[in-house]
Length: 236
Image (tube, rainbow, N blue to C red):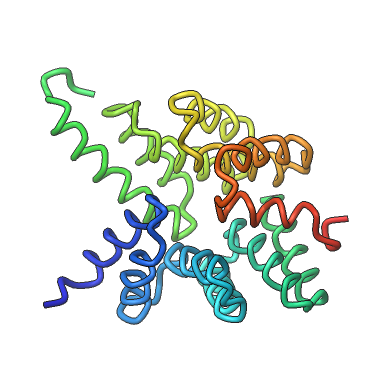
């Protein structure tokens, strides 16, 4: 029996974060068919489709993500890459310009398990606020989560991403650098750090971060996609 869209969303996001993309695809496509209002679902689907060579499906998914959240920088940049690969350079330029435009806007008695549960609840609420474009509320929720469990790298990464979306680049760099330092083997914080540098126009700093990821994980789809973006004609 299907447990509902929330269960599918949680499982799909977890599988995506663990880079189990085939499993993530199964769950996230179910979510999209049941609850078509979450931009991050379509962004994740777009990345999976792109990784599977389904470029038209990827473009459609990224477009939907942008329609739901016009300030979704990651989706706009990813769409640029897809259109380049499809040879639709006019569309690629439009998507690139859209991305450029959007980037210029603990209680001690609680045991670690309980703190972890509460932290994840705050983080889940933060993701919802972030997906709706209510970034100040998202930041507040992620901070509450990190007050409880400052060692949760995924939540720290979400906070850094939210700072970037609200154009607070200095805090984005600070938080994402902290996330990288917590575990250098965790690729997502470094990929997101590179994306913050890119949105600031610091392309070489972005290249350095993504190159570090690809040196250790050559098949990382997000780092590969963004490196493709750096080398794309529309980025010249």
